[in-house]
Length: 399
Image (cartoon, rainbow, N blue to C red):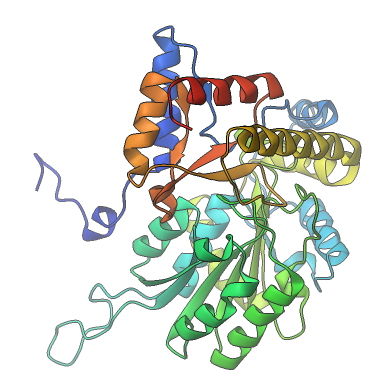
């Protein structure tokens, strides 16, 4: 009990975002005059493509400043459906909800599918006899999955991919031992934050087989699908048997460098969209009108810009691999996104604190992703700054 507020048990289940906490600390130190190499935040360091910015301005000038249909403007939903069909997903515009950022799409999905164990299903005696629905995460997992699951009242089970080089295919037996008829939801993020791993088609087929066998719904978080290097992205919903049990989540922040625009979406069955649309309409109402118009331009006319950014990220990844190899640091190299997990001290929190205090390099502790002993670095920074970061870590005996 605080002074004046009695906080809910629900909000007490979660911690603030560890990635944003490190980024905020880096910003504070920079405001004090420190030269921080910030490798903590998952934000492309490129400007939003000029044509997308222009489309947003044009939409403002055209008066697109009011509410839209709750689930999104028809033109954007149609463009999203066309993009999904290009991934082999049988998609229709009416099966899309446009959201203010991919996080909102994920949040609505958890809230739509998960029943909590917090007394919402009382027994005849009046006490709760219902455990929260089981959600299975693949570790290392992006920090907000756990938070969103806990906010929905879920019980969490986890499968550790770290012993398998962060890949899913060699861990399918472990996944099979974890997923059961009691599992309600499995979360699959490929390409992965925080590892950069891109799961093979064989791995996703293994997910499909388990999901069908145990009647499990799956979130396919594909926010990094356009940032792929030596692998091929496969959309889970394109596999036989997955169309009716997959919620595909994606957005514009990463591929199109539109983080601050806050634009994402989900795709699922008509039935799911009808149910999730209730939460959407009663919470955010709709995504911002003129931002949705810019999203259409991003989907239709930015291939050259997207490829330039992807190629730059690949070059930076390769540079880091070479730099770490020079200093005897063996890393599991991901084929997508712009993250790398580096092995550090057992106390990864203390290591990251030392990195920012002594070397002025900001990284995120692996324990934030349920991967103790690692630190996540984002290579959404220039090659010059990446070299500087490694040099500083070496000079301070942190590598």
